[in-house]
Length: 289
Image (tube, rainbow, N blue to C red):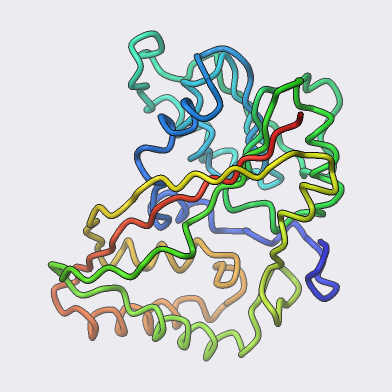
């Protein structure tokens, strides 16, 4: 991976997190499919390549905009979760109301080692995944897989969102205290697979896509703002779904960590309920031409 102080990807990066991921991660802003459909003129034809798809959250959420969606991830547990989730998905658009059967498939591969024969795509998406890749190589590869007029879309929570002022019905999650507890168990430097990320994951996506020959960017901010109620179990799942606090990193100390985490959460909210404001989603669009 470029720009991460020599850190190299390994297969343990998200080991053991898949079973917690869907429950623990907050969803994308609900207007995302419609916003992308308008911006990219998507009409149910074309093909989607979702790179670093994890348990298929984004792949399944956007699949109704395409004739076919391909989710790619190197973690077999993530792909197994995606395959389990797919039959329960029901699309909103009447033409595709039956869901993703026959239009979604899963491919186990790293972004740097995409198998031949995938074909060409209308849109390629990176949902909170691009920073784990050899970004220069992947951006160039993806550009070659896009049809003329195609686009790469980088998706993440909107980092510049103004702080909300309205009161929440339950206490917020104690993020600072949770981070301190993780450091107490795993050490002061952020863990990632078998390596360390002392300075976090790299940024600078704009320069990378530009050097790969993309035009742009165009930025869409899809509003969030809904208040979500979260339980203690949801909060534990959120922590164990992160690469920096993946279950395998704790080894035999995992039960002790979870005991400490649940004690911290009960101190923050004796009722066991929390409130979280859904963040807005930022979609950064890069055009092939």
